Length: 243
Picture (cartoon, one colour):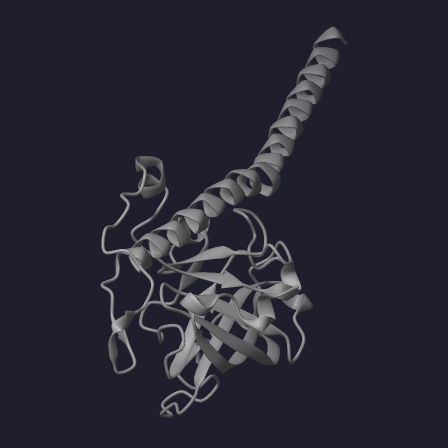
């Protein structure tokens, strides 16, 4: 009898311990990775913007119009960036994504590639897709849960909502024109002309992809947008980013 009780108690303790470990893993996966990734992605965004600002200040002065005495504001001497700033800037960082529908302070770095390691650091651009603002498809992937979950609210986007890409030189404002749910092997959604593989593009598209439904990779949630306007970064944020 005592042996049976001992077995039952031991099994029970093991189950409790296992349950605790599973709970800790879930907290780490669903909560702590978000905390760490949010901080890292914010540092990357800040470093990228600071690098662009420093580069802009270091640009050579150019005459305005026909009068050589009138020059564009700037400073030929570049201010060196602090080491912590440089350390926070991944070499693959290339843009910052703003989605007003996700919040006025939403700004997430876009990096080259869509590997698991890249998507821990921000939003990934599918290698081989178009550059921001370029004719073709600027195709992006991002987590919907864990590691900052930058595309967590992707299903909240509606037709007509703006999506803004900030680069070193420009702001590109896209407008959402389509949302859909597809199987993971439906790669035509990131074709140069979304949904029409092999067709030559004549417009600039942006595609956002993420897992669907929440906490599953069974399908993909897709958002397509078309470029509506382009403005120089030196002119300041576009109206779409003005609260």
